[in-house]
Length: 105
Image (cartoon, rainbow, N blue to C red; front, side):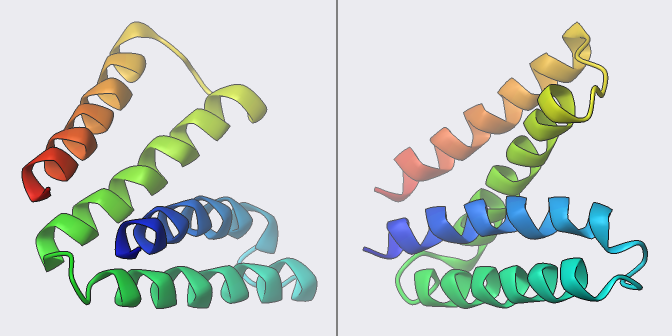
């Protein structure tokens, strides 16, 4: 169950990291409140996951899910570059996430 909390924490991280783009330096109330709410939920799920998942593994996977998700959103929704080096780098992060999960059991 803690792995599901970790996955949810990573998905929520994608939400709050993307939400920061819309806060205009946290000067817009509604996007700021939504972003902060997602942050709190993400950190809460991460802390629950860390009850049984080692710190280094949980944090690396959490931040990896967020990094890959935000990079993908950047490519697909914000027209950010999708050159070969960027795609290969994203795939390397995914490989690291999978490797950490497999090593943790």
